[in-house]
Picture 1: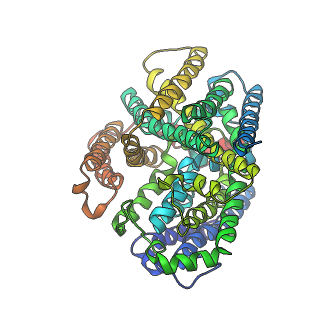
Picture 2: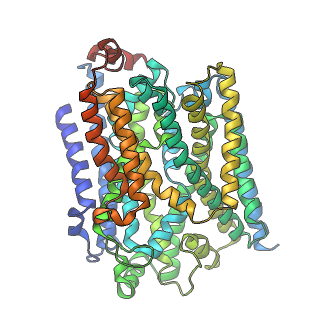
Picture 3: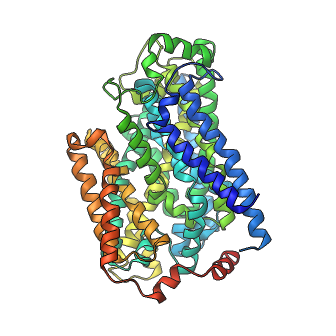
Length: 73
Length: 497
């Protein structure tokens, strides 16, 4: 994966994250059911966005690191 | 032996451990200003991870978080939303700040801004803003520590003594060891609060309701309004989406602008450490989940505490937990309070000297270090005095803090990324932003759609900054080259660091 793609992906994820937790995006998840992992849907929604930022940032870091080690600038 | 005695013993052991760790840490640091303020830029990944996490999560998260979930329901989710979003941009911004810090000798946020936009008034203005935001924040941490200690010892240790003990120790290790002590104790405190929060957050729902799912089933039947954003206001009315959403926005923007967090960029050993700290931060943010579960477990509990913020100690004391667990919980809550309080006290003193006094009064390095220590003591004393004599006005002051702190974002980003920005533009913008935020803070009825005053301040600040900058003459090329090195040069510097 190129640096451009990895950065684009990370920024896109963060932008979607922001839209998903404020009005109007958050309206989609403003509901109690279905329960997921014992949590009401809205609670799960917020937790899931945090959780999935982990693999996204990990991927970004891997690509950034390889790029720096490769010495391309 | 009675339960409160056991609890007191555990708290005493915990506080002593903090003191020892804090004092031992100082033996590693040099006797320079960089040593006291930025730990000689020496922190590795483990310490950076815990320093950042434990500093972010204060008494507000540990006591206020459950309080919000308990009384305002899904309104608390706003706290879940902003942390990662506020932190993530620092994957790129952090190393940039650290690099400039190493080359130009910055150890505070104001030095970065006033370095790019040379002006002593600007530096002093930022010092004043930081202090206005800090003092009520420290006061609330001391109150948190006092409340916890006095409630779990059934009042045998009074509020004034609890706060004095916990913060006496904080002041002592910050005085002796500076930033290194903050780093090492926060690592200890951070592990403590995370373990305690997860253990209790899972235990309480199972113990009281037979599981997390059954607990929420019960709430969904009895109080469904608590489970959907934007939740409730403190008086139990539905909260508005405009207010909820802009709380998140202003917190995302203001998050890393808190000087005590921003300054952590100067303590990292190298850029990789900074980047990985950002990358791992979401794991710390997940710690809010059990914290909220604790708050939700109080909703259907037959008795209620007098004040929602004490729901956590209330639940602990009313569920027949063994004394050891109560003591450990208390240590966890103290950890949350102290790990933020120490960073705040330390940052307040450092900023006052470096940005508020030194630019006006020439001083030797030794004098600056001594003055910082005097101010650590003074800041602690003022906050302690306020904690004993506070009214509602403090909570009010803290509520405005994010509005004021978020106004530092445009100067920081202009300093780092906009060559055309000028000193006059930044000062004009900052003043306009703060005045706007304050006007709306004191006249909330004027706020359109309940939008947070910090966002309104930014809406005014950014155009003022841009227009005034464009109307004044550009900074010299020589000066700009210091801040915007060419690609190759930047890379060499990064490797050297």
